[in-house]
Image (cartoon, rainbow, N blue to C red):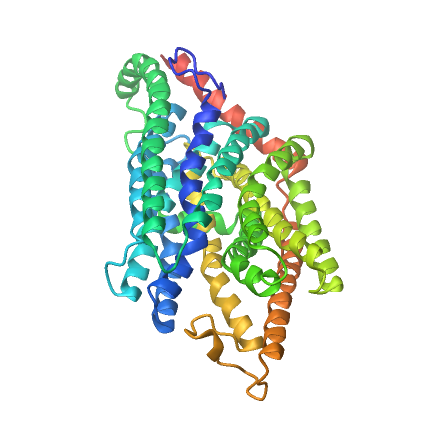
Length: 509
């Protein structure tokens, strides 16, 4: 990938413009993750049944929309290399940029629907979640697919991911700022804050996608100068008049035989669960494990650093990936998560400074791992392209199929977390009166004893979830073979296929 396309009047490198799109997603999505549950539970007073129904329906839609949108986007690319007219990389990139220019601003507008009460809390909860996730999915699918479409080599993809992490870190500053505006009793300031964020995102998506489209449209003009002659030759020769299409069932059968894909989604399902578990329960851990032991400013600092540090830390992880490869770095992060959790379990909940470090580092390393896994998916795109001899890499569709299996972890995280906490302590987050908690221990009347039990339950939840996740992930990751020589062979084959097809097209003309 040439970061400065020939003949382009746009001065910014492609990697910078691509990475900037992460800024406009991050600045909104981090605020959403942190406040949407608290907004509906504490401000809009959603009832427990409506919350569970909304999350269940959202679980289904959240899983299905990724492969659905991916299929609609990339089904034309599934044909074998010998059938139909060729589709060039600039055409694919331009197609994805047009989708981003449409759906990016709509994603920002859907973000605003959460912060104004306009319907029954249960109905608004369901509609807002499904609408927001639909546009987020369209943005994420096309943005992630560009990572595989813009580059093939690990070095170039790492460079693209580097700028994504850098801009995501800048976007996470919205979490720091949100803390100053968040007030459950007076929601007006927070609403204005969200409107400003959404407006910035709309402008950002529009400008960044326009600049990128200008760059690739110039490449398309060069292609079309030659393409008309090539098209005439193809028509005269009568080659491939009918294109063989692959059905969804045939594609699913191909994926079911893709061994590395299956092991990866098993590991990533646990990773998505853990990432969202940390996001959903971070405020709860701060409240019940640290609130009366650290200052308010320290709590704010831990909250903000937990959102920014993963992106900054990922810059270092990416440098390790360039040196050692993605596989050993991800494996090392799983081992580190397991080791830190065991140390914290042995130390106990009364080591306050160690507890602060663990709560923050647990989220930092978990989120950092999530950022690296997009590189693994792009490698799976290459392997799928080579194994099944695709006309063009179906990157958005493969990202969508990964999400089909892994997205349920996003919904399972709050459901399983609240259930475990309720079973162990009797604590119910939907209880309106904190002094009237439905307790599983009615014989305990002392608030001091009750607080100690709740604190102990939060601590066990904090340490046993990452231990369990790490063990499952290490098992699945050990079966993943797309690494080392195998990975390099796949990349060489994809590059050779692309170069051969380009040379044949030029020779034909």
